[in-house]
Image 1 (cartoon, rainbow, N blue to C red):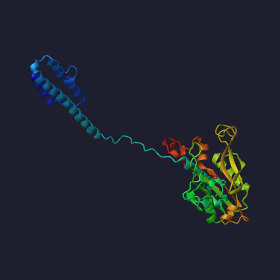
Image 2 (cartoon, helix red, strand yellow):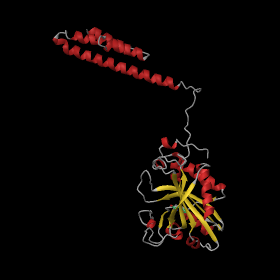
Image 3 (cartoon, helix red, strand yellow):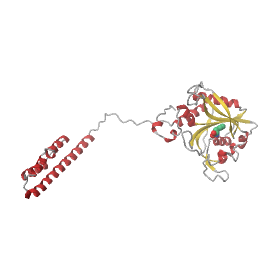
Image 4 (cartoon, rainbow, N blue to C red):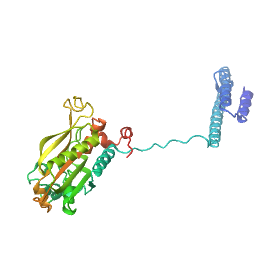
Length: 344
Ligand code: PHE
């Protein structure tokens, strides 16, 4: 038995296997159920008791040596295979695709709105997102006790008890104020931008959203001019069949004021779940600029008149693509964003 152990030990030392299959074959031959070393363990049972200690140790050494050799051979084989693979660069294989990004739906709609008004001859103006109370409220004829000035709507940057606090703009009408202060008349301008309101985030409201507001000031501007501009815009945006209707409304900076609905472009007025069975979708607020607002910015309200309007970009995007939950626009989930394609 001793000789046999020595013999196998020698064999193990000289063992050479090139492939995984050969290694497995050697493992089965030595250590498998019917393997040579396993057979020696069977034989060991009949060894005389006084020799058991010596042979036991030898057998265990043999088993360990065999297992170690097999492991070493396996490691060698994998290393060789890796090396071979890295030398196998196939330069004729087609490359990996780089996914093409898409524009954010809010940007797509903003550009569409801006393009429509650019065709009507409007300039585009932008202003600061961090504004003062004067440009966001006071110059727009908000009375001091107006609820929009309170903490529940406005994010204040400085103490709102002090005079003219700094805040995050709640609408882009403040950009229009800056236009009235600086631009020569007549003024025809639209102001796209991000606005902030202290609202709980839900499917229908968010503390950040985007607006496009417009302003037109000249001599003899009338409500009929406003109605026509909005009708043309609605038809460009939602299709040539689109109808509009106006409902009386209230804004501190316009008088009279109106809320504009467009005929539902999904059911064409028949009533569906997007327009909640009414056939109409609310898209913007508008009105004739209040003379107080003109005067606050140094415009002679006896000579000039104007109209203003404002709409939420996300709201129009929701109608356009029938997205039910506003939060999608802010979470930047690529599965959502990649749904949108545009040629703008
Ligand atoms: N500024 C208003 C808003 O944020 C929208 C508006 C603009 C309404 C101009 C009338 C005229 O809701």
